[in-house]
Image (cartoon, one colour):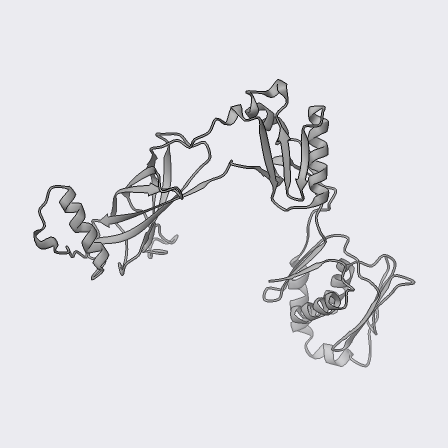
Length: 358
């Protein structure tokens, strides 16, 4: 590739007027150009796929935080009703079921993530979020709160002091109506299933791609020495457990998740006009096209594979998107102009990649 920069007397004065501003923007824009890994780079199978059924489960519950210093709910009916029911269960008779009002209590939603293969007695961190008009949860204590999954079964019970954290200088709190109880939930129910006795597995690729799925299937079969894996579609690989691994599925997956696979992906250019960030593949080509943008004229010739910026720059032989971006940044093209250029290239079919705007 050969890059030639040529000054143009016809517009040189215009660029000199905004020279400092242009140079500053150009330096910033050059600093944020990033290149993703090439398709031939190998990745571990555990980093590009997950095993069906091996995932977190979301838990949710409703609870009460007490012990607040006058920063609780002021007039929320649900909080009063909850306190009345709580006192009734504790043996305190509330006449006429009158709602209890206290600014030292707040109604909250409690959430947690139940990890795969979690067992009874293990601890979880929980997040506590106010649902009333409480001003702060600082200093509060979460009362016993059952946490349910999507099947409405109780899998954990939470309780403990709420921590809302603070900014580094300790002067103010980040979000006083949201806090955490570290190790505040105890798992009360195991998830069903005997994982080690499974006869087959299904892998799901994080980024479905037919080429990658075929490679994964081929590599697994080569590792196991037989036809044990098959690509169901672009994002799914089914695996049959070999007879010599029956009852030892954990060892089988430990072997497979560390094999290396050459990941393939579609060519893509990602533009963030607000920050001036460009993320692209290394070898994305531009088809023959001519385009004018402001004082710039861009021409890609099919015969010599040349990108020509009239009066400014010339790139020859095997020009790619990265070559174009470097040249445009050298000339001080602003992010919004570069965005318009790429949108036009995509519209006319000259950009041989997907274009994603942020």
